[in-house]
Amino acid sequence: MSAKLFDLTGKNALVTGGTHGIGMALATGLAEAGANIIVNDIFPEKLESAKEEYAKNGINIHTYVLNVTDEDAVNDTIPVIEKEVGPIDILVNNAGIIKRIPILEMSADEFRQVLDVNLTGQFIMAKAVAKAMVERKRGKIINMCSMMSELGRNTVSAYAASKGGLKMLTRNMATEWAKHNIQINGIGPGYIATSQTAPLRVDGHPFNEFIIHRTPAGRWGDPEDLAGTAVFLGSKASDFVNGHIVYVDGGILATIGKPSNEE
Image (cartoon, rainbow, N blue to C red; front, side, top):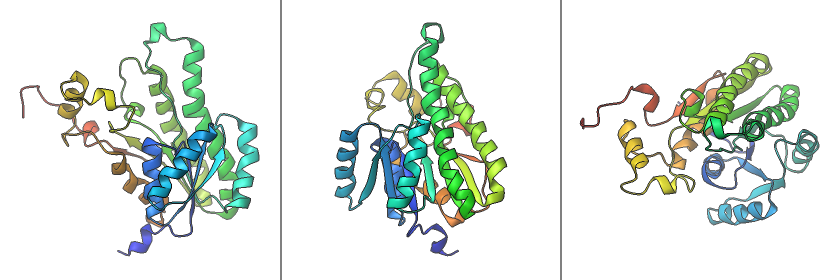
């Protein structure tokens, strides 16, 4: 098999929310495979900081201030990106938020906000980018789903609803756009070691012990563990892969778990 199948040289990849954590790891992986990286955020200072961080790894990124939930702004900005940088070959719909609030304590406005960013924002971005992809008869869209696309957990009802919806939106995008040679797939990260999960990963924390015990691989994932899947889904190697969610979870979804006294 030729390594050229995974070569992204000359491809332009837009990674929403790629200023830190998982988004930055995905963008870095795509860049190392040859792609030109475009990153957006709603805060200019985050974009400047991210540009400096990428530069430490020799990666020059293009940055745009853009709110993925603002349809008018997205529709205005995507053509500007394509004019200034070039055709968007790969869209990684990574921007997202979570609110850990029990259902009985969560307001409808809080619930809607999570769905707006995690689901409606993905719809807006994909729709705007796909228009040109349809005309060019090629393109890759990667939606960042979650294990919560499959499982529930206390206090994350809105997040799980949004990610479950995103799983089905991914399948429906594939249903409508596959005939235009556009591949739309999702990545479902397991429990990943990021700054957001740092407080949970200290030795002795019950949740840290639970995740290590619950994951067949016996560890938290690193953001870099997701990069290879992004490269695959963004490359020619996945040209006949459509509507799938690839769970990069160390095996959690493969097992019912094990007794606490079992090694």
